[in-house]
Image (cartoon, rainbow, N blue to C red; front, side):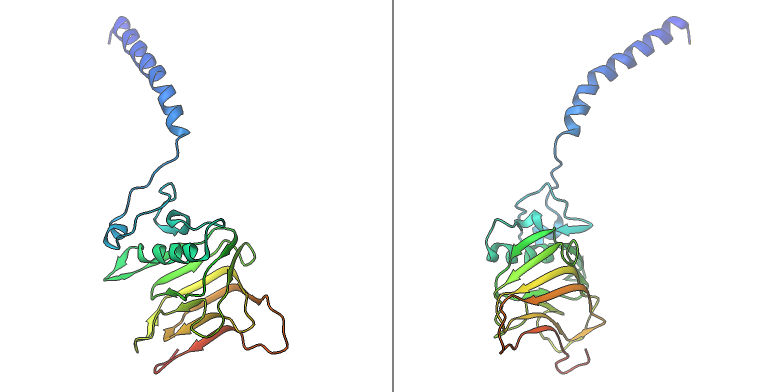
Length: 209
């Protein structure tokens, strides 16, 4: 290559780079938006905040989970994150991540099905407050609804559950094999002499647990 041609090539390259630099800088300051996944579309779920990635770990904030919203909204966000996980066969499978902070959830049971793990940011970093009064299932039920079939690979970790009722239930393992509950702190906010609350309950139903 002649020196003149080389000079022109270098000049063109330098000019092109200078023109691209401002755009690259602008793009770097723009938050990414993650499109709906196939699993979200199949489950008819639309993310509330698409700046949070759905994979490989589903962040519940993508579905509206926030300290400033209602307990029902936070519970629905966790359920949406579970439903939007990739499928193994026809069942969701993967990890749902809860952020640090104190959040309200309602008294409805959050089902953690087979092959799904829900984890917080730390045993005292993520705190869930629930009015669960013990008349139904616990705040979390590993294994999901009873079906008479043994479930594998579900787990709950790295969070605190604060029961607002003296009779509340924290976690139930239902028809599970090797369910993992680790670094979970459960406390009852109501102090009384008569309490029937339960931290972790193992219920095998008609099969081993």
